[in-house]
Amino acid sequence: MATKIQKVREPRWPAFVAMVADALIHFALPERLSLGPRWLLFAVIFVLLIPIIFSYHRGRYDVTRNLTFVAIGAITLALVGSLGLLIQGLPSHKDPPRTLLLSAALLWFTNVLVFALWYWKLDAGGPLGRDDPDGVARSSFLFPQMVRQSDADQSWSPNFLDYLFLAFNTSTAFSPTDTAVLSRWPKTLMMLQSLISLSIIVLLAARAVNVL
Image 1: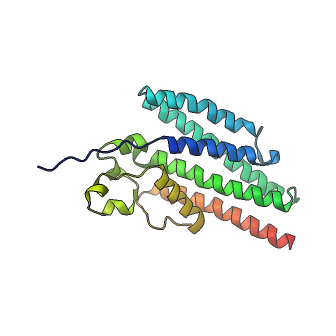
Image 2: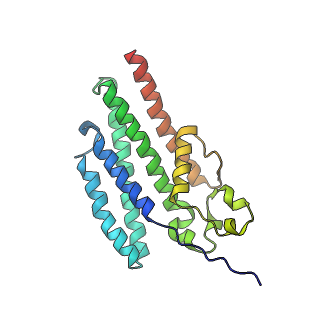
Image 3: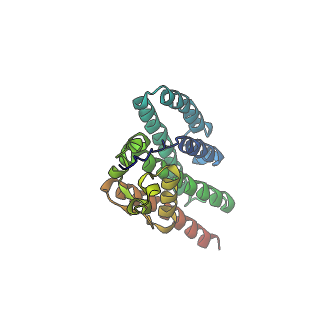
């Protein structure tokens, strides 16, 4: 009789750390590139994380899921707003070269973290869905471990670090590299992420040429 492999629950704390990191990166941006006070996003994330963690430990996963979407949405809005303000200031040279380089680098890292959070939260119903014994079978991504047949691979499921690696590759190579994308929604998000990353790189190159 085959022994059923016990699946380990996916840790949530790496995603919470990524949310705080996004808020801190936004705080490090120049005041001009913030839609509001720079501290506002950090305050919003800090306030939301308290009920997110509390509701998770109380088993109110519906509340946790909705509040997490609000937090990721706020971070995404801040990213789009800051990128728009950065582009708006380029023709008038509002930012000196060093400030522009730092701001673009910070926005690039924010882009990676934001989309890693979206992939982590949406794929296969989120971490709660992947905790289900059949959750990985519903994944929109085909990770290499899913096609191997060892006992360790059969109990494997992606966690936040896997989605962070996926998002990093998408921003650097403009492709998911070793992971196949099976559904339309992640393809759409990946195109958007690649477009943002490419825009930042092109803007930096154009500004560098202008300075030279």
